[in-house]
View (tube, rainbow, N blue to C red):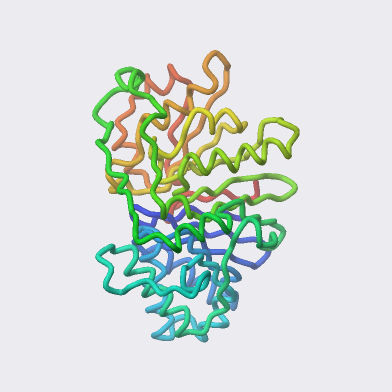
Length: 337
């Protein structure tokens, strides 16, 4: 079993593999390492059993468009044989609405192109909703969709194009001590495309993880509150937890973190996404266990992000956490957990 957080530019591209089956979640906006992984899968006469596009966002979609260009050129043989099933919650599939190609929003234009390519290749295409979709298997891994629900996608499909940029000032130039007084859950992301993100829980008998895409904090708290109730109000144990929206402090809250038991956190970005991740995100995580002797580990798929954060070794030791660089040239790989 392997879960690979690929170097994919400023976006996400996650490859989940188990027992010869594969699931690709998003394509980032740089396909250098993605294509290398897909070439390896194809050379082994294996397929992408599932291709999941979590939401309309350029740094998640562009790499998939690049993949479809390669499919057009025959790089991976018969497209329907290489990509067995696509999950993409598009308004076209959900309500028969076609996104306007004349939209001035890059992500919407790319979503239109993506829809066109999926139809062109006649790929098996479906929506993935928490209230309508069954869990499914990738090898011995059980994959469950926790969001979005029908109401969220219905609302998003009727949206005229609301899009809230998450650009905020960076905090890399300040020490953790200087930033402590600015840690707050007041200014949060509520972008409609991010709220519509597909959130996946993956587990086996040995581990459990949550892949959060760019989910908004209000929606993520709703998801975890529901899981907590079903778990008898016992903290939710995760082997590792992907911090949403490339480590933005506007997509994580103290309330969210209070519902989980985890000391391994993943941040996926190359640092060229509006000064993400935020150091305030790390401070929020550390706040949950003040006074407890718990060491936290933050895993990065791009080594340069650690130097960008500019967190001294003394700060790390004093607050009992580590920043862990990619363990492979293609990113960070969790294997045989």
